[in-house]
Length: 215
Image 1: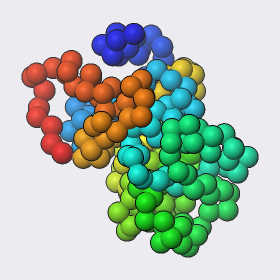
Image 2: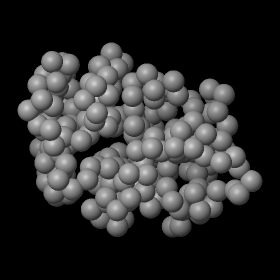
Image 3: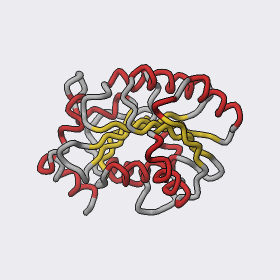
Image 4: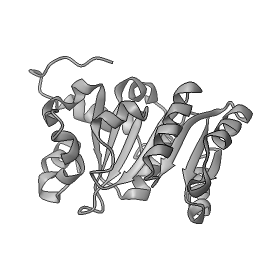
């Protein structure tokens, strides 16, 4: 399915529930890009879209720090290994700012901190602050549409927000900070898992009458 057809089918597939919380915060979907972020629909379930983002944003010779429930350590370790990415796994239920800082101090190759399924806002704010202080990118994955608000993107220093739909299991949304997104060109380890290429496809069909975007 082409990106254009994909976007046209969004309403029919009930994916609108994913971005509804953002549309209700004074941001028209047509002008969402003026926030400095881009919305990219991905035809994938939770695991697939997370793999797509990891494949696209973590560059060669860079490592990933992944905060996730320990019960799924093996799954995510195998996924990252398949992508050729070194990953450090931290149990989401026992994460602390001091432990994350210690890991970052010991491994300067870590370029991204990613949280999977973390719902505690305090933890997300703390992780975002650590990412900013240590000049790392912050990736957050949440399920459903009402966990993260538009203002949270800056408060939590979120560079990439991955949202999956409760009603459309094979449709997901990636909200990416444009200044970070432009740096991912050529990063993707697999052609079918290239967030940058997906974004460029949407830009290509964006109305020429829209206001100019800024990094």
